[in-house]
Length: 234
Image (cartoon, rainbow, N blue to C red; front, top):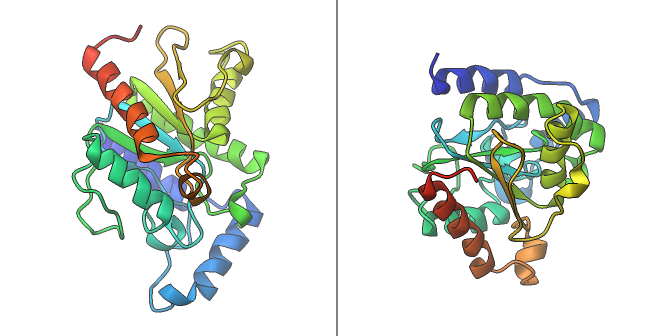
């Protein structure tokens, strides 16, 4: 079965998931009440599946869909300020065909990249609980199995820790402490695992305060491109 077919089946499982009662209540309430600016739009209001190139060498791991972003549009990082920054940078680095992402049918295509989130439902206050992230790890594990990426880019410490927690649960690493988070960090994991890259999350809080600048983010993406072009896992 092709990667596209496997990911389509997996995304169907993600969309139908109702494991976390708190998140189900919140995402559906937001979809009913809406934000005034989007009152005439039909909200997605379900778990948000991954999106991108089914042959991607790079998996990008975010935190969770935004209540009025991915929870509205049905596509991760689409329709919110974080996504505006992310896709502009991905386009500049050659991982996307256009710099904007407003809705699911806007023509955006990712090149050699696939984007997912540690939690697949919009959480209250943008803060998923540890148990909710844990429930989503089976989906991340399945995506990694299908894609077999050469690199993983974790956006923010929660996503970074979630990925390492999955590897620790599987016995693939001994301890998460051996791989500290930091913007621009790059870790070679045990043989056969993707190289792990880290960046600050492109949240408004980080970009407006310039904790994260376009230059900082582009530097990470270009480092990843050089790594992927090298053909080397070491």
